[in-house]
Amino acid sequence: MTNTLKISLKPNEKIYINGAVIRVDRKVTIELMNDVQFLLESHVIQADQASTPLRQLYFIVQIMLINPAGAAEARDMFRRSLPMLIASFENQDICNRLKQIDRMVGEDDIYEALKAIRALYPLERKALEGTDDIPEAPRALAVGA
Image 1 (cartoon, rainbow, N blue to C red):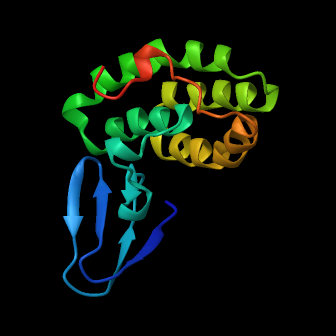
Image 2 (cartoon, one colour):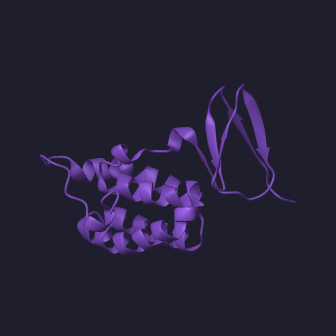
């Protein structure tokens, strides 16, 4: 038996399912009855919100989910960016989790990869504390690169 997932949406809220953008006009609960890649609107970030190295990585991975036409290019950017990102962090916990995220992306488990990246935000914030600036992200992570 397949696991189902119920998601409640508010009026005018969007959900991204396998690249399709769906907006509901009233409060609704939808039931996903098979495995799909989805992202709630509240978890989508815009390019100008990708202000830290991990948020930039998140933006790249989210493109794989919400823009299937650009997924191959985003995956290539992810592959180029991840080694440089891992090398830029001294925190081994972050580095180890980034390696797990690499595995998730490799297995096309994009939703779980995005969740794992979001979970790293507090560690990133701690790693960046005490610095005057957010370190420059590797060039391959630059939005629009």
